[in-house]
Image (cartoon, rainbow, N blue to C red; front, side):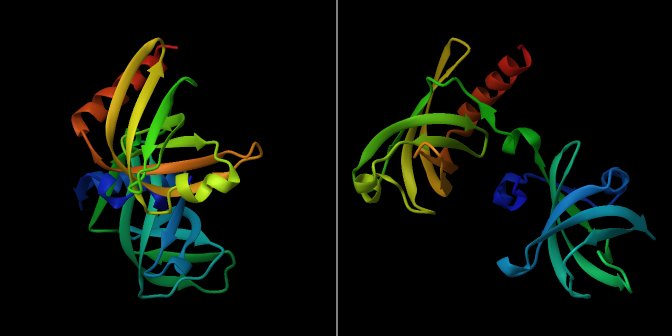
Length: 232
């Protein structure tokens, strides 16, 4: 998955330097964990692996080079969820390719629990009503959802795209009509279109991020969906 698609506001737990960070870093290093890394500009984006530790700092391996002394944001997965932190490149190990770097252990990390970004599938009868500020509204199929947003399949004829397909970063009103294991749930709010793609059947699969939502209600629904998923 693309770790940087998760909004930083979803990382709601800040863990300060200490034993917990050491445990997380050791766990990640022992498992040779893949990560995504990004600098100040989008073109600085790359991927690599955390492969070990050195003097309490972190050793990473990657195909692209980094700038010593520069800070980068790193995101990766642990047993607890997705973690994000900023770290400075301390040194480059010479004459190696893939490149090996030593980066500093962060002073703190941010944690996003798995249930915040883990997409939960819903029954095929589930749908979502999308309404643009222009007044155009339409129903489409709801594919999955999480605490951070939802995905939908939209069947739109070419000549109607400009009227019904929202623009990237456009905020829309929505109503989710969720059916799951014989139960029905409803949820309303606002969301932004973050990305979409066209599948082989001519449908647009779109990913939306919640911008205004009843947090207690979305948490309740997600917990119910998780519980029903485990009961299979």
